[in-house]
Length: 547
View 1 (tube, helix red, strand yellow):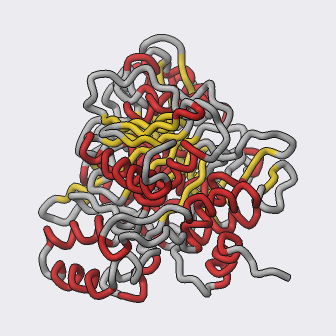
View 2 (cartoon, rainbow, N blue to C red; view 1 turned 180 degrees about the vertical axis):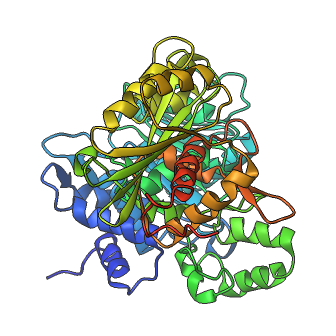
């Protein structure tokens, strides 16, 4: 038997522990292994081998690698194998139309996608290919382009076939072209992308360039959009949202057969100063970046908060906020699973409800805290008026949620509270609702209507004093894994946006720093939990109800 191809051996080594990797790469390797066994997919080794061989003909043009062939490491081959190797069985259509690659700086990711771009330009078999390299600035976008131009000249030094210009590379034999542009270009129209690259997406203020490239791919048989980045500082920007979708997908919380993700990061709880953890975020450690250099950066950052944040984000691929995260994403995901109301029984299962009524045209959340079989389950319903899908600043996000059935769209330009009332009544068929907590602001008429229907309302003002106990208790329940949270992207989005406000007595309450950072699902959940805490005779023994 011949030697196993590196792109097949790498995931085996990761899963066996021979190759040190973080959880997200282990999950990606498991996904790759499972995909090889799927009946609806075919893996074409010849295509992968051709791509790897083509890239191997290129030569580097900088630093210690100048003039040397581009020898792809196993992790790089594995990424390429995912992008070009999987096809839907019985077709010539590739499985992945998008990829998301995230790792620390100086790992060779830009060189990798530059080489892959040249492959799509020359050797992927599509006449009239259009390769578009983009970033937030022309200067940033040209980094990948210059790499591609160097590779092109190494393949065709006399430029008889591949002609490299200041902003384009052309292959006249099949009328193919590589372009470079940025978000600040005067026009972003007129593209027909077959392979696109978005570089350093973490700093993109919006998704406009990425949206343009995606929308231009409709006429291509096998288009691909590759987004590459390091970690950033601002989790409100579109890169972090895309990252979270990928993380949810790798965790099995979201199904997406169109996206491949390789996220090289340390695990929750790893010490950023521990050298043994660095290979998790730096797959090219001791190849393109020396351990000695990285050690010097880390040592210099110790004791310097400003420098520490910079080293963590850029050199160790750790997303950092200006403010402390309340509960890390990992803990929320560990508590998350699919829930079904049919699993509950009104004779045995008690429920507390929290209602966060929005302003007339904003997101509304209703949370249900259910005590079932000595466990707690948290389910949240979301509502939005139809007009908000067209007028809100985050309308693309809302429309995506609506299409996936994660929120309920009510008619008109204001949220119809009758839908909320009817849903509470409907859910009460599966559980016994003990209390429905609500803040009286903006809720006077709704409260009157619900009271007339016999609903057990309990006023729960959204004050710092009221939220201290449920906030601390929710943190304990999540960190200890004693609560099950329904699988809903909106709920995880809300938890990510929470910051804590405290007073002189140490009381805490969730807040948000900007309007687009919605936390409605968390507020409603804490109202439900607060009602359970003030009704201890009905609460589960899992709750710490003492003062």
